[in-house]
Image 1: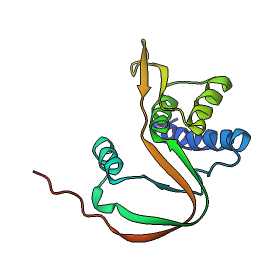
Image 2 (image 1 turned 135 degrees about the vertical axis):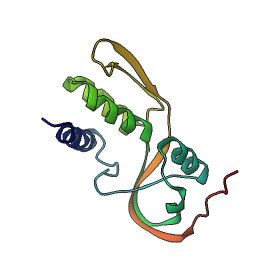
Image 3 (image 1 turned 135 degrees about the horizontal axis):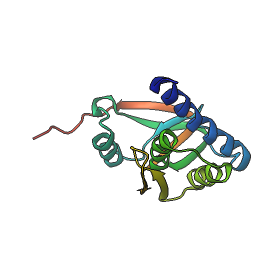
Image 4 (image 1 turned 90 degrees about the vertical axis):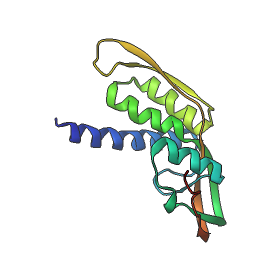
Length: 150
């Protein structure tokens, strides 16, 4: 298979496995497939923008309204899962542990993964960047002006 095909399959598997775990063990949590993703503060937006090179000029301020449910999750676990799914195969138990940690609100996660060249192993760990998955309506309050650079 081509690298593009494998990347597409693994990206799908991340979301599929997350949804299976949510449906099985966290039925009251908002779905990643239908929810709206948001950060709780501008400080978190700025930190994520720097780490992932997301443009701050697209950030907008919203006020939640008519919220059916909102779930706080650690986006760093999903980022780690995206890396891990590209590098390794997992047992059902390890997949179960990963996604239960994500939906359960773990404030960090560690995985032992093959090195990029496949000749060794290395530890990957993440802390916590909290984001919200919201089922409901968000009313736009305005665009955020990013801070001016030096």
